[in-house]
Length: 121
Image (tube, helix red, strand yellow):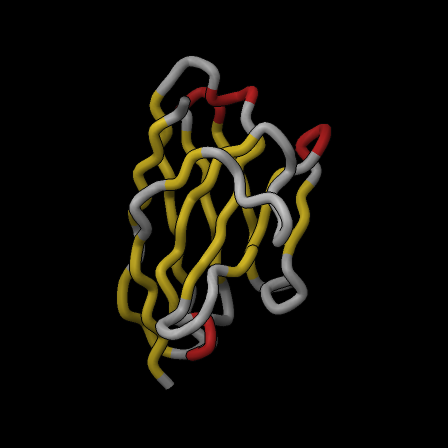
């Protein structure tokens, strides 16, 4: 099982950008499908972005065009670049690893502890 540690969260204003990082332990990092989920106060966890087959990517509609997922296998790290942030993006963001592409139906097998992102209006 892979261990995940997120970083890069913080307080920003609407329209700003932020990049989250997720450092993974374990020598099999490249074999996992990596992605991001988020959970806002009082709401259920929701899918944000994932790598799919052949390093393609998939995004939730509410972040498509604003967020970009990337990975550096040499550094065992996955990133989430978030641009044009909105107050509704405020949530705890979780890095997730799975044996399949992540989605609202498949929540992966390993979760990080989360990093808080707060977007003020």
